[in-house]
Structures are given as C-alpha cells and as structure tokens.
Length: 358
Ligand SMILES: *Cc1c(COP(=O)(O)O)cnc(C)c1O
Image (cartoon, rainbow, N blue to C red; front, side, top):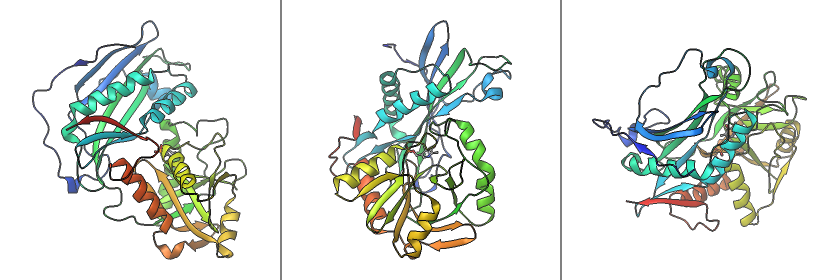
C-alpha cells in the first residue's frame, strides 16, 4: 500500500507532563494514527489526526463479539538525539498473527511501520529523555461494523496512540511477589493465548484481583489442561535460572511469544550461557528450590524489560528466590537490553531501527 498519510493539525497542543510523574499509560500525546477497513475497499484513509475520543455505533461488533487486538513497543531517544525503535518488525508480524487468529484482515506490515515512524516524528517532543523513560506505542485494531450476529466484521479501525512512560520500577529493579494460580486459567492450546487479544486480559482480571488481595503483584499461570506446567506471568514471559542453566517454557500455542523473551534467549546464547526452551512443571521449579539450585527467576516484557521474581507462592508453600535480591543475571540482562535500546551499548544483532535524528 503506497498511500499518502493525511494530516490534520490541531489548534493547540497539550501541556506535557513532568518526567517524574509519568508512570505508565496515563498520558497520551497530541496526535494519533487512524486507518479504516471495509471489505469492499480494504484498508484505507490512513491519517494522523488530533488525539480525541472516538464515535462508535453501539452495535459495533467489537462490543458484542470482541474482535480486538493490540501491540506494544517503545520509541527511545538516545544521548546523541537519535530516535529509535527496538525490533519493531517483530511487533508488526505478531499483529498480523493476531489478525489472522481473530479473522481480522491483515495489514501491510511495512506500511504500518512507516506510519508509526511518521507519527513518532510528528510527536518527537513527546519522547521523554529521563533515565529509563520512553514513548510507549500502542497499535490496536477492533471491529466497527454495526451488526448483531456472530461472524467476522466487515469493517475495522486501526489506531496507533502514544504514551510517554517512566521507568517501570523507578530507579532500581525491584523483585516482585508472584502467586501461582491454581484455579483460574489464562489460555488453552487451540485458543487465543498466543496472540495479543483484549479478551485474554479480561479473562485474567479475576485471578489478578485475587492475587493482589493476598499481597501479590502478579500471577504465574499454569497450563489449562493439567494445571501443572508453567506458562507465563500476566503480561510477561518467565525465566528460571537453575544450577547455572536458564530455562523458559517452550512456546506451545497458549504462551505469548514475547519480543523481549526472544531477545533474552538470543543474548544468553551470545554470552554462551546455557539456555533451553522446555516444558517445565511448577513442581520441578519448587524441587530445584529445595535442592538449593533455583538461583534466579525473572519475567520479560516490553513494559518492564526484566522483572526479577523475589517470591513464588504455590499450593500454600512460599519460596524466596535469591533472598528477595535482584539476581546478577537479571541485572545484566536488564542493563544490556536497556543499554542497546538507549544506544549506550553496542547492538551486535542490529535490533534497533533508527527513526530520526533530533
Ligand atoms: C505482550 C505480552 C508479553 C510480552 O511480550 P513482549 O513482546 O516481550 O512485550 C508476554 N505475555 C503476554 C500475555 C503479553 O500480552
């Protein structure tokens, strides 16, 4: 699709928030990218327009049948003023995998990345430059056809909104307490757990609230069939370092294939640290702890990058990992990943994609 992207200017710009008060996902920039789809004409009318509420027909199919998917990536500003993205082509590809699973028409990955770059250039003043900050990019697609009846919609809207975000855990990584969920499940093989669809999150809220009420920050999900094998954390993939070797659950169709997960595996291989993707039961993790071999556990995801796990609770047993301290490897991975993203470290894999120079 070689379409021009229209631009509609807004009358006045918003006041930008203080870097210190950013948090995550609270503020949105001045403009958004929008594109429409209709079966008769395909994806059309790409435009960058003032950020504003949408008007939708109450019968829009998304409200009733839930065709809604999204992505999440970040733009970074380096010390020399380069604006760059981290492996964005993987997010475009995964968005199309989500499209395919939810019967949403595929998008042109190159065109969407081009549009995202254009939006970022328009909004370059919204990229914060404090330590650990970035501009979070949220592309999403939902069905808009006004129709009651279960089938794929014939109309969709794709939007990209931008949110300046702070460091997820402030200045320092901080180990989190995690509850292993035994009753509720997140995703089943054959279902939609491997794609980023809104419903996966709706389905997780009950267990998340239960965990929070008991003092835990997150949930570790087990497989839906046997309630036995480790899958992932709420919005992160999970890694364990056991007796010098790093293991992570193998992608099985119900686990979300994280870009950060893939990057961690690549980095470990590059460093010659043994890493394996395996089917691992929660029992094995607790047994490794009993043997004194569970050295570290950490989550991986775009938002937090690396999130050390300080405590795991399962079956009324609580184990403390690495004395609630940040593991050496967790810290090294965090430093390396954020270093590459912020242009402070070599990028031997060519993961970063330059958008502009300011
Ligand atoms: C987005 C997401 C992740 C992490 O993926 P990244 O590409 O690393 O950000 C992990 N699990 C779930 C359920 C997710 O939605």
